Image (cartoon, rainbow, N blue to C red):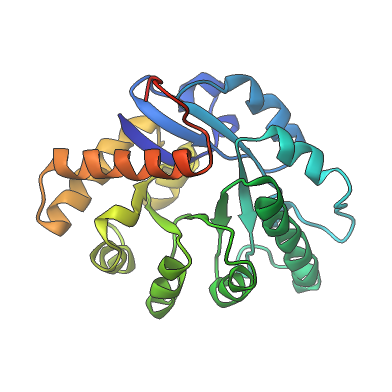
Length: 247
């Protein structure tokens, strides 16, 4: 099985377009509407998260309904902080309030986190260090490499995304993160288009695996199997795999 640890099914022409039968998919959502439309795709190999993306946070964002959706979700995501693409600095305190609420609920309801950190890595780390019981996935990390060990020490996994082969920082991240803490992702069809102009799909995961394998001096199958075991370990820790399943 391949691993797509950060996907957005609603960004495709149809939800099914973001899935492969030979792939474990963590389908992140951006808001309540996105979650409700994506939830129908849940299955043995498709896990659906609920989150409010930092781009979606406004001064009017309410915390009142969040917990009811978290209870329904398999995990929490996409959540986090963004100080680059979210231009309204007045909303940064609200971003932090919303993110911290999700982290608290992660602990309360035993749901792992799928986290966005763009240009806010130090604040994300500081908040996560307040809640060491929480863990999960740091998605498409592009921040200071000196913080990576701190995230690893908290138990987080790192995804390698579609910029593998296009980013020297991602090269360094592949070198730095142990294989047993890596996962792969596509982040919807627009992510690859942003990188190289091509429309992305879940079919791109083997390309990322091949790049990781060459970078680490391992075989394709060694990396593929390691990523699979990493995903199963995380899912089992959060009681999302019980007994024989398709994965």
